[in-house]
Image 1 (cartoon, chains in turn red, brown):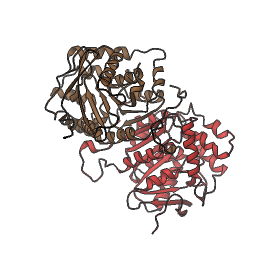
Image 2 (cartoon, each protein chain N blue to C red):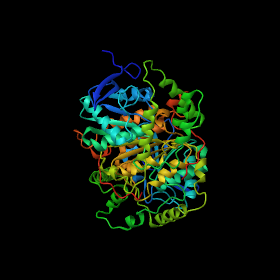
Image 3 (cartoon, rainbow over the protein chains, first blue to last red):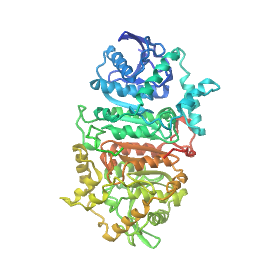
Image 4 (cartoon, rainbow over the protein chains, first blue to last red):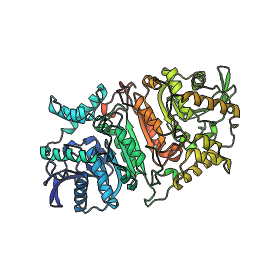
Length: 304
Length: 304
């Protein structure tokens, strides 16, 4: 049997919550699969094959479109809570009882909601270029970047994901090439779905008293990754996430913007792979304390 | 020929700047050696063998006592600039023209000074549990922790380096065991040397206009590592370092205090090893951009 990869995995469909979810599934079967949650206006084709295939070497990866996005049916709801509930329905429809969740940008917000709503379903969490409820967007350049004109139009994603330095831009062009390799492609995200996602962001980032309190209940080992200078979701939000989650490791990459893990895919895959495969307390293994990665702990007052 | 390790490497001496520097050197020779710069009141015996021997698998490591510390002669100066100048003299006396520098706590301040004063001497930099000039010490518990009484006295270092959680404390006890394995030990740091180090800290953290400007000139690829809740040098300082250095990767470990790399030694060694061995722009190798780790870039305004 041929093992599929990012380019060859067929698009499959499964029904849940009245939605026909499109998904692709590939990599090394048998362990805990890793479910990818996509960014604003992204489809299954927007992931970097260097990341998905890299992580698929040691586990199964599952890409999907949430409700109303690209080839999935239904309407995109205007809140991450509802997107999280839809994602949970999708995961359970696949018959899975335990997954790792990766979320990028608004996908990281959905991944947090999945974990908050169905903690028993999620083993470990990877949050890339994202932020908590009430995220500090004061320095975000998102509105002007998405409103800009690009020639070719695909270069919007250079502005979103990469920094202006020559090396980051070169990494960005290499990413765009990788991204466009797949032949059998998803339709683009509709204006309606994008509008719903935008509305969800607006609600999510509204400041509120105690808005970070929910993070104390997310005890899953979490790896947080962001670029040094994220112009879409400001980098400080990953620092706030790390300081507020009981059990999170933070990695910030240099000279990097929103798509930091596409700029350093080998490095990211190596670090994420180590995080996902490391033996943790609570796993069925016996280790010296020094061998252990992160485990839940009582959150101390961090003064943030 | 037997290869030495943390426990067996003999203490050697070399003269420079009128000081007789004590040092130990072991590991895999032939590449760029890694020079370790120690924390407040620490001697060569205070490093974690799991870290030094771990990193010595792929390179030579050099431990030393700076001027006036333990088995080195001379007086400890009361500024990190002078400690940096002494360290440079020591490194050059060994005939080395290029090293990697690791600094822990005030050793990280010395390592920054080495790099600022002799940029051609330093290839890459690892800064653990440290901060920039003008560091924010407002939430530090250092004074009360060092003034405390401990039974046994060695448990001071549990309070300094580890968090109160059971798992961190267990990791701390394992570290203390490893630390005390070596037979042929350094004398402890004198009260005079400790006082000079304390005075150096006081000068270093004084707030001043533009105090972070020097970091823009440190273009060496830098790995910054700290615990989530460092009670000696507050964690926010590593975030400030990362945001201010042109080319730095940040890693924050969960449930960890000042000695985060002693709590997760295998993880740290793996990440530091990857950082030190990765091919970077400027090295004599040709790589795809996506294979490259961090390279110098123009620092964008980060709004901090």
